[in-house]
Amino acid sequence: MAYFFLRLQPPRPTFPHDGTGEEMAAMKRHVEYWHRHALAGSAIIVGPVFEGEGAWGMAIVEVEDQAAAQVLADGDPIIASSFGFRFDILPMPSIISRPPAV
Image 1: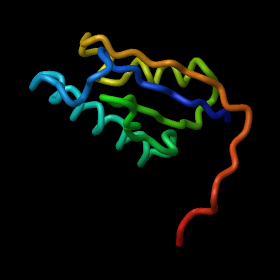
Image 2: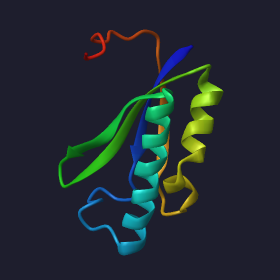
Image 3: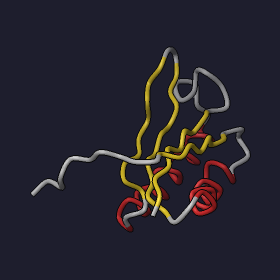
Image 4: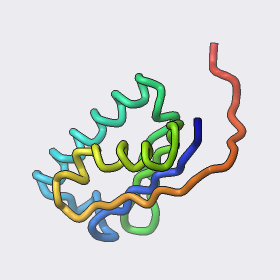
């Protein structure tokens, strides 16, 4: 298994603060998609990162290889929405993680 950092780049620097109704509906599907992958175990951590006037998204995933990370990114409904979001996929050669909470 391999680890990857996925950075979701928004269509503009002020998103999500100026998100349209259609964009926010697509974001709801995006959240549901990643929640399913977290429950399945491939997504280790997922969430927004606020920066400046907007935000971008991040996920750390554990998958077989970069092609599998690309499949996860391509399957995200926010990408299929054609609103201009895109993922950067960066390999993580190792990670340090805290033990699971009990």
